View 1 (cartoon, helix red, strand yellow):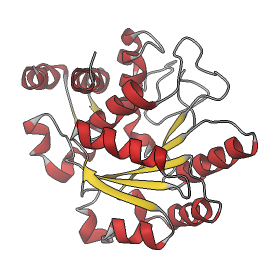
View 2: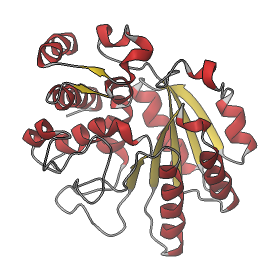
View 3: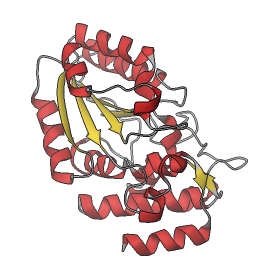
Length: 267
């Protein structure tokens, strides 16, 4: 399965997952599907049959409310049966609404308290360096999340320690729970900010498969510093009626009927 087909499957499985409970953070899940498809298909050194493999690459989804997108990805790659996606946030589930490494096979860090995931990811990158492992650590934050001061403390630490095995992605979809990010705290220009903090910074269309692939390759080749890849994305990408909800799709009702309607758009 190539990255384009994989991203479609991730979107489909994400919506299946959220429809199973009838409500969820669908907008910020769909905006990540292309990134997750590229990372897991082409770049990450992982083994679904050995999820705790020593020296494996790791992904920390710091915007943990987008857990269904990660669950869909893990199910797509065989970490657990796809049928488990229908248990999202239900009693006894292994798939809580926010990521939990102690419950879900393939999840590398518990996240959801915004700003904390990136700190954990930077710690992982430093640990890999100290252990002389070749593991690369990837982390995804939201643009709303980037308003947290803890994010920039972690960024400073990563740059200070020249963690060239650390790649940070910013899901820059322009919206957060209450409004457009520019109306809450305008964080632009991301590229200049990260460069000023000592990062290699790349800005791309976050839905362009080839651009994502090339940017990750550039990050791997940068030997002197960590890399930030700013992904300009569309919240709810791939399904027009979800995109059109705008800010309201941060978390919205999503029924099985909505899923069937959305699925027709993906084909």
